[in-house]
Length: 124
Image 1: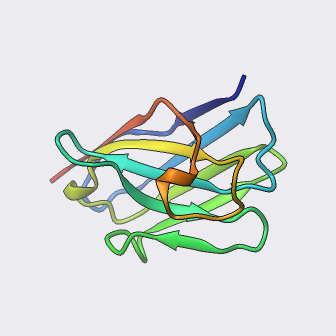
Image 2: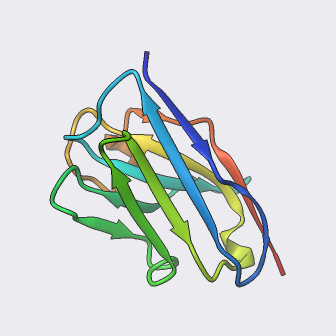
């Protein structure tokens, strides 16, 4: 059974940083896409950042470009999201996602495994 476990969420002041981690077990995602999405109550879940399996392609939402960095360590089956210069509007539940369908995608429809979510709260 596949499990994705996020860690690193919490509360931080505006301008601060957090690093999210997502460790996968039950399947090796070396050849497949990994991504981070977020959701605010009452709104649809949106893509934050995605990374390809091996060629380094990345996608970032316009709202996080230049502030967030996605990376992956295939040896650890883990993906990271470094979040700098956080803003109150970054407050959301952040979800890690993995695909065993495609090597790269910025569409959440292509991701078939999801973590339980971790809360990120940025205070002003």
